[in-house]
Length: 501
Image (cartoon, rainbow, N blue to C red):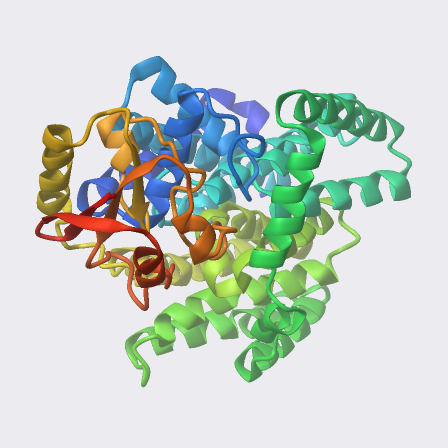
């Protein structure tokens, strides 16, 4: 099996990568055709519209996220105008590239075309933009991490690797910081001075750009201090996914099987397969409707612990640190939607450690078949997106609101939209004249009294029924309305409009 090297047919490998990428991109297009997650999409595109119009984040308005995803979407708006399909095309293209790149990375690790195709197949369903199909920072950051990994595998000590490893930090802080810290540790331990030099160069250039464009103090305040205070979960919450009896006996089986497999190949392989056999059985016979989803996601902590056992492999160390950094946002269950390629690379490292032969490929086939079955159910039922009423049509009442504002509100008047779930500014092309466009505690630094005193606000629009499930994320609407001198202007199907006296 090891003789099946890509250099024998690089054209075939490019074709396979292209086909896998097209499969992932097609899934993204299909997802966008059947659902829209207003809360998250509006935050990206509303702020991208604001940036495209000339507002500078951190300096002109509070902004707790790294800039590159928003700047990229703002560039699309500046180049091609305000049309949603431009951003859908971006997500599809990024997802296709990430899947194709993952295949190339796995191929370089395993040096087996068959194993690489098998391992990469699930990304047609769970590629970086297949679960959440709109432009977002986690998938973008995963794509940047994959670029770092691909370059690292080509040359593990180069200035280019050091410079490139800075980029994910400006896509999403927690993922990028974990990768950067791991790369610095690895370079120091292995005496990779070129890499350290590249990090110094890239970091210096980034520092200069941040200071010049945003202001260093502004950037640190919003992306580090405020973001950590509002979004960083407690350590106990981060570790609770490992406190799982099912995970413990899974690990016992896999570790025992892997150690024995180094001496007795066939006899030990069934031990390694037990967790996935269990997942397959419970996929069809379960007591809790969430169990198939939970078992699918349990493979993440399972493979993370396995990566910890393979930590002496530089790539395993980098991916282990990066995934743990990702979980600083929403722990295992909430954070995996945009980084599935990293799990696939971990599978590849584990298979390579076992030795790529017919037995390990059979094991990989079982693992991937079970993962793919669970992934299809996970995506088709949209179990990750249960926080929103994604299959209702929210367009008619929003179209009514847009038409009413076009007729009745001058374009230069400042409008306060609460809680900010809709693509209002992106759709209307109006200029935001308030500092915050979405009133969620992880984003909004202002209390009700401060919001009520925003200067120049002439109109207030309150959405009555949200796509987002659960209690209103703002929880301050009634207090803001009480503190502002308002007169009702219109009661539309799903919106109340008030005019400030």
